[in-house]
Length: 122
Image 1 (cartoon, rainbow, N blue to C red):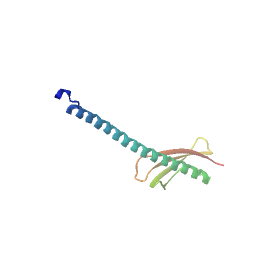
Image 2 (cartoon, rainbow, N blue to C red):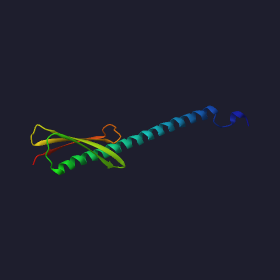
Image 3 (cartoon, rainbow, N blue to C red):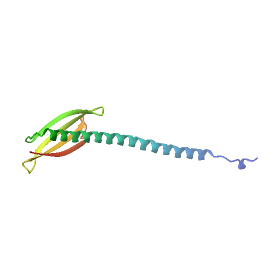
Image 4 (cartoon, helix red, strand yellow):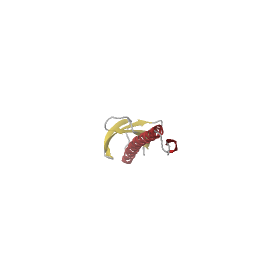
C-alpha cells in the first residue's frame, strides 16, 4: 500500500476545522451572555414598572387632594430594595392633578421605570 492511497485528514484540515469550532463556540457563548444580561435588565424594568403603578394606585386609593408636592419612599420587592419618587403637579384643569412616579434601585442607579397617572378632586 502506498502513501497516496491512504485516506485521512491533513494537519491543516484538522486545524481549520478546530478554528471553525472555536469561532462558533465563541459566538454561542457571547450570545448566551448577552441574553442573560438582557433578561436581567427586562426583569428589573418589569418589577420597577409594577412598583411605579402600585404607587400611583395607592395614592389614588387614599383619595387625598393636595396641592403640588413631592413624596418619596422605599419598597422591598423581589429580593431588592427599590426607591421611588413621586411628583404631584397641577394641570390646566383645576380639579385634576398629575402624578409622576420614578423608580430606581436603592444603589442610586438610573431610573428603571416611570409611571404617570391622574387624580381628580371628587
